[in-house]
Length: 511
Image 1: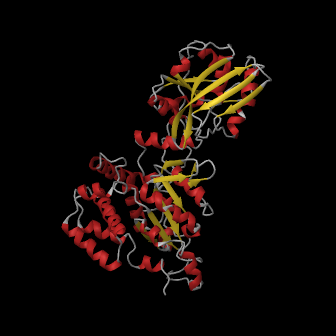
Image 2: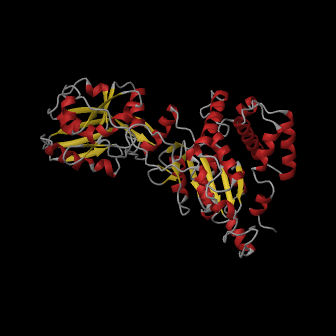
Image 3: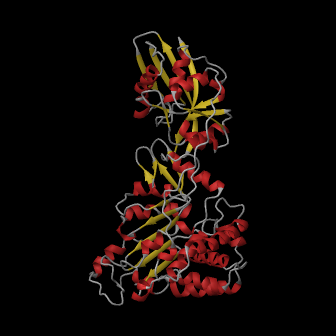
C-alpha cells in the first residue's frame, strides 16, 4: 500500500479553510473513489485527473485509488481539488518524490484534459487562510498568481501538470513576467450630462460622501436612472483594505480579472430577481447581488416592480451590512456593505402628482403598487428625493451648466477623508456605517441642531431610526461644508431631503 498527503484549501462563502487530501493506492480492481462529502464537480475530478496524467506523460496507476478529503464534515465544492489530487497520485505511485513541499505548501488548481492548470475561484480567500495556517507558499494556477500574492504569501504559479510535478520534485520555479494591469471596462458617465435636477444632484453628492441610501421618485423620463448610474463616478477609488475586501467577494464568486479589483462594484439586477438572487441562497449558499455590490453600489431600478419578499429580504443587509445564508448543513456569512440607490414611479402609470398629465390609475391599483414598499424598508432609506419633469429650456440648452463628476468627486473625497479621520477605529469609516454609540459620541451635534430635529419629528412623526439617519445625513452635509460641528442648517437640509411633505403624499394612498 502507498499513501500520500497533499495540503489543499476549501472555500466556505468568502472564507478559506484547510483541507488535507489523502490518497491511498491499494491492490485490487482498478477503481477511483473520492470520500469526504464531495460534490459532483469533485467526484468528476477522477476523469480529468486521469486524462491529464496520461496527456502529460505520466502513468495512471492500474490499482484501486481512494481519495479522502479531510475534514469530512464540510461539503467539498469546486474544481480546485484536481491539482492536489493529481500531485498526491503522482507521489503515492512514486512518479514524483515526496518531500518538504508536502508539509509546507498548499496546492489549488483545476486541470484540463491536456494537463494545463486552469484558474479557479476564491484564490485570495484560500491564500489568506493558507498564510494564517502557517504554510510557506501556495501553488496556484498561473492566472491566479497576482491574486494570491495580494494575501501576503509566496505564490508559486504553474502553467501545467508537468511543471507542477517538476516543482514538487525539487525544481526551482521559473521566472515569469509581471501580469499586465487589467484595463477598465466601464464607461465613464459624467454628472454634467444630466439636465436640471439640482436637488437630485445634491442628494447624489451627499449619498456618495457619506454612503447613504438614496431613493429617486418621479415620472418616467425625469433622469432617475441617469442620476443613479453616475454615482460610481463620484466615488473615490478603493483603498487598499477595501480592494482586498471587494476582491475577496468577487473572487469567491468566480471573478476572472487578475490581481486586485480597483473599481467599485455597480450591480443593477432586473426587477424580476428573486429573493435568493438578490440576497443569496440556493443549494450551494451562493452570494446574491447585495453581496456582489459590497464596497460599491446596488441600483434597484423600478423599485416597486420587485417582489415584496425580495425587497423585505434587503432589510437585514441594509441594517447589519451582512448577509447570513442559513442552511441545514451550514451557515454562511457574506459581507454586504453597499450604498443602495433606487428609482421608482409614484404609481403604475407613472403620472401621479404630475402637474400637466393626469394619472389614470385606480386607487386600489396604486395601493397594490406601493404596498411592495413597506414602511420598514422606506425607513432605512436616508434620502428620498423627487425628480420633477425637466423644463424644455434646460433640456434644449446647447451647454450644460452643472458641475462635472470630477469636481463633485473632489468634494466627496475630501468629505470622506474627514470621516476617516473621525472614525479611524471603525471598520467602515463612513457616517452611514459607523455604529450608533460611536456616532452619538463623536458626531458633535450642536444644541440648535437637536431643536431643529425635534421640530422635524413633530412635523413628520419620524421613527427613532429615521431620526438617527437624518442626523447622519446632516453630519455628512457638515463634512461637505468643512464644518466641525453639525448645525441647524445641516439638519434642516437633511430633513428636507427625506421628503417630509409632498414625497410622503406621493408614496401613500389616501384613505
